[in-house]
Image: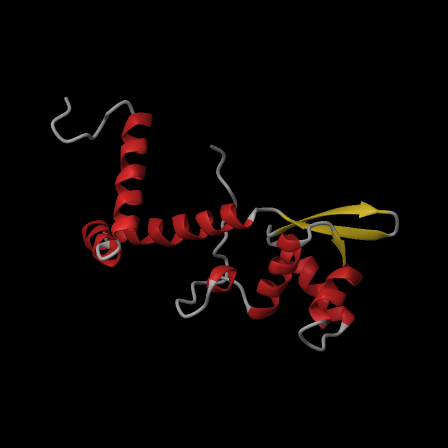
Length: 151
């Protein structure tokens, strides 16, 4: 698996949802528009954003350029315009976000972070089942290494 560029460049916002956990409001709206409809020009992104807010063309242009420079977006020249698409699918983005946040916690506070995580999902039987499934899959990938009682 290739190492992806960092997703949480701007910090973590616990009260937000989805991409908004790590991106500002405008950047989140841009990602949502491009996940819904990849391959948009600046004018097309602007048109999608104007459905919800007034926004200057230069603001959209600058935002897309910065998001491209930060690694969130891909762009391709088509004629005289750039066409923008997300670098990551929504699932890849959310997984990367979770890996970075949890990785930072586990790197510093391994025991408390694992305990807190299990406590948080402990009341949801479906989430606990999924956690057990993911742990079993990881053990199979590693050939049983780390399995209780395995030598």
